[in-house]
Image 1 (tube, rainbow, N blue to C red):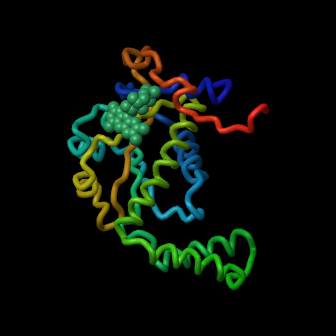
Image 2: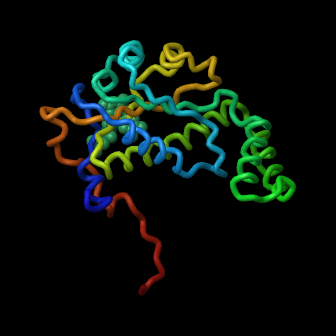
Amino acid sequence: MNTFSDALLWRYATKKFDPTKKLTQEQLDYLMNAGRLAPTSFGLQPFKILVITDQKTKEQLSPAAFNQPQIIDSSAVFVLAANKSGLRAEDVDSFITLVSQTRGVPVDSLAGFRQTLLDFSTRATTEQQIEWIKKQLYIVLGVIISAAAMSAIDSCPMEGFNPSEVDKVLGLEALGLTSAVLLSVGYRATDDKYSQAKKVRKPISELFIPIATPGE
Ligand SMILES: Cc1cc2nc3c(=O)[nH]c(=O)nc-3n(C[C@H](O)[C@H](O)[C@H](O)COP(=O)(O)O)c2cc1C
């Protein structure tokens, strides 16, 4: 892919994957690292992402995603899942420890930041926190989709699934997680007619409202 714009034009929500073409572990690692580097609010990352390559698990998951063929035929399915308990004090503390270790600064110097995060976490209900975590996961989703496209890897984001069914099939409750959004990755089938469809997007003039200094 020459440019990011080329990649965005090349990619499309792949409906038909070639089930014989699999991503390598190196490619999966690349996509996972893209998700890892995505920005999140405060940098907290209160979520986990399951990466399903096991065919049997994909088959079990399929009915929970209304049998969309992208689940079974893709090379891997990423299940982006929010921490079901929202943001707990212990999550804040382990994050503060990570910041301290990564940047080599004493935990005490982060006391103000820690308090800000704790205040933030206690202001919202658990449901509101889960919604907030899901917003972070959509940013992660966009970054992984874009990284995939840059590397000529196809993908299909999916909201068309029953979250409680997906949670049940994958045992997410026991992991303290709840599913937010799915992403199939792999390679497009040569006869996926959607790959030839023109991109339908509003013009820039309809989407953006410039508020610029007059005369500049
Ligand atoms: C959050 C989200 C959820 C989506 N859910 C589904 C889905 O469940 N099934 C599907 O086939 N496509 C799904 N799509 C794909 C969109 O329909 C597609 O991205 C949109 O029509 C624009 O087309 P393009 O991505 O091919 O350019 C989803 C896209 C996003 C971003």
